[in-house]
Image (cartoon, rainbow, N blue to C red; front, side, top):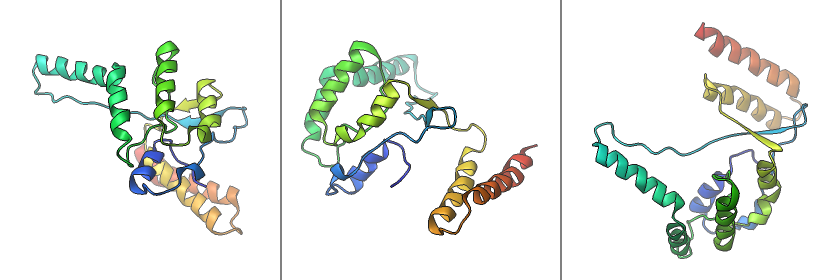
Length: 184
């Protein structure tokens, strides 16, 4: 069992092409006291050089739109992917669009999926129905926060005698003293 982002299935498939991906599932985190399951958002960025000409900037924007919105390009990518065991189609990723375009895109992806999309249904249904709420990463010292909490979770998992509340309290105190208080 692991807590990870849905795009990690891409890395697993690419690094371990012989792995039986049907043994992997993906589900939302348990609900919080307010009855909602939360998850972190993510995304891709595309950059254009600051020295690009206006024509180059426009061409880059059109190229990005073309690769995302032209169904023929998607089909070509999926067809080529059939020959490459490291190409991933069907990972549990956030829907990019809404409405008929998203429905058609999802159907096309399911047709070419080389991952067991049925193993991600609970998660994807939660995202689409907004029962799983997406949050952005912490803007300030997020990686340091993950480190502090990760170390506490590591202790809890590695030693059954570890008191989870005490370990998390200690992590919070350490994070407060060594990160947040230093920012004042």
